[in-house]
Image (cartoon, rainbow, N blue to C red; front, side, top):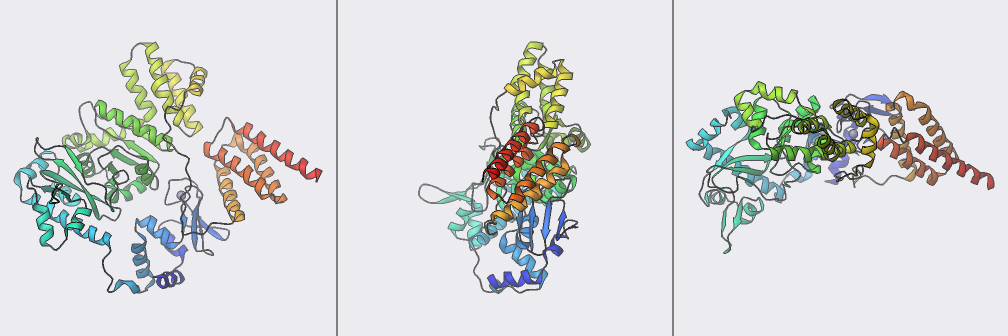
Length: 525
Ligand SMILES: [Zn+2]
């Protein structure tokens, strides 16, 4: 396989491949573009034809043509290899006579199970009638490959065996469980089946909704397998990704019915979590496409709680989070069934999370003093999580206008608020193990370019200070004191990450004093 990789690399130019997805502009020896892996206004995605590699200063994405195709097409390495081999007209040596890998077998058995469930649905009038009664049309059934599992204990298992799949594979695919005696039985029985797919649209798991009232639990998911990790897979992402990228936001709903009906209503950028709360891993997948989300959860107290949690997580990860006001007692699926236009209207009227939750509290709490307490307990901690200082001050002034509490007092309280939980973790750029570790000098060069880019985004009023900071940094660079430079850069980066408008001057002063010390040392030598 090594040979094919090298041949492909010789034949294809990274610039040509990348330019099919984004518009590249010349930037010195490199080319730059707005990053296809994260949402940004100014380009921080660089392609180097000399090194045949790409690097994004915004999100840390980097690699060669293989990595690029893997990421942008959502392929595994082997698939990216096939994809590029075809482009380069290179025949792959391994393709003939190689035995199927375990993953291929799992994909195979899951595909058979999907067709089986689909066929079962066509033959079952009550199940079809139920699905139709929820407002789902035939096209949606086909698009999402919705199926049905009867109440029998071994129907799927026997079918798969008759096709030649052995017990081990069916078990590893999460389709059967073992009784105490070791006898297998179907996991999904008496359920409406929704297949979950990977980014290429291949089925990797199922989510089953109980058909009869007696069947427990109401929702059942495949167990985690070699192909499926529940806390990471977003239902519908394979079909929604293009639309999320294009529209630059995603709609997040709770259930499978909500998801398929939202798509049916034409909201093609909708995704759902697969039977869990939204996790950091879910949101990180989304971030490659857009950093704006609308949460549209059920209109009940459980939905509101879930939306609050997801908002805090999203905000702390730097997302612009809005929440849709789903009417009390309804869910997105019901709204779509009633009137698809109303669903779009509900989404259009969504509000920034801070404002949404403030409205909820304000609606319930008439007593001013208690309202103040609630703001302190619920709203300020949420504002505290907002990364952008500009956004923060926007919310503080909104709160002040709406409550009559002075801004200074809100700021003072905000400073005192403890981060009640910190769902955010320090983000490391995604490191690709295949890329050799850069030399210290190269790292510093890269980081300088990043800071250079950040400068351009600073508000006018900070230009003077940060120009000074940059000049001082260049001074140190001239002294070739790499370890000192490293420290200063970390400081500058800390500024960049926080966009600490208020603390900027103080931080810069610290840098100055560091530099002065350094210079004094030099004199003494
Ligand atoms: Zn990026």
